[in-house]
Length: 146
Image 1: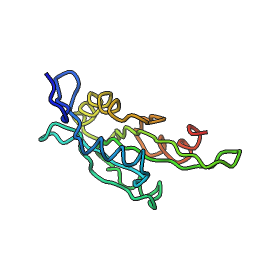
Image 2: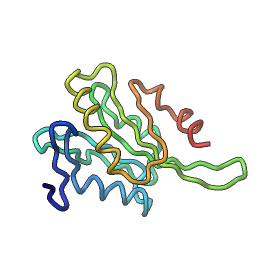
Image 3: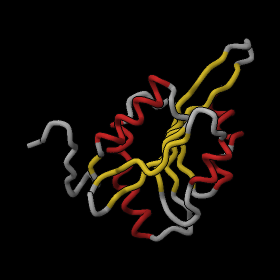
Image 4: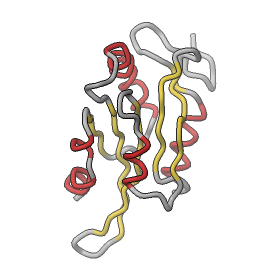
């Protein structure tokens, strides 16, 4: 049985997804009002919630600096670039941030919740799994987007 408007978790799919998380992603995708959104698992609420939103003027460095050094997060980043034909393009990246220094429990929680959460974000172009900053630096995004 499901309740409209709220994704209910079950043992096999990890946490639910807050409506605010889906709505904030849609704002990034459709209205381009956010450069990035960082999400975290709220164990008390048993759902994925918005932790931080980066405005359109924020840079990739601002985004990377917002990820915790020792804890897991999910993030979406709206990457703007110019093609070799001089066309302005934008691609949305989903980043599963799971640093090697984070707690095993956190890594497991984020791993079991990732697929379900990722499915809720319709419109992501690329997915990156990163355990340290070099696996998700700007060059990685550039290479994937072209």
